Image (cartoon, rainbow, N blue to C red; front, side, top):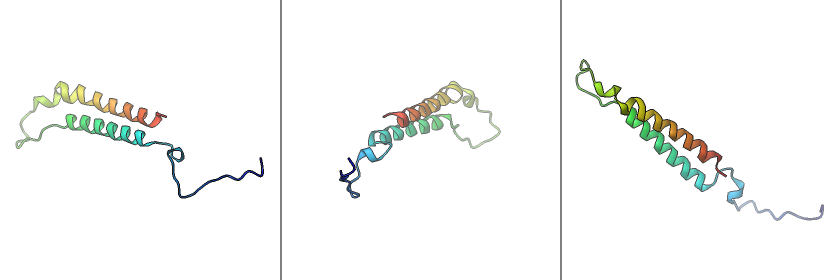
Length: 84
């Protein structure tokens, strides 16, 4: 066993050399897009007059839906990292 030489080429890089594969990086990009979508939904639309009370910032979309989408994006990111 001591006489066996390892046939290792330093120029060749395979997927086995990295912890994450191409599919993991694609899933990470999808998760980042989900998180960005959540933050876009959370943002309020600007108005010209700041004295106007905007009822829609306290609506279902900004208060409930957007944070759930952001949380789902972070869970998806964890899955994308842990996927073997």
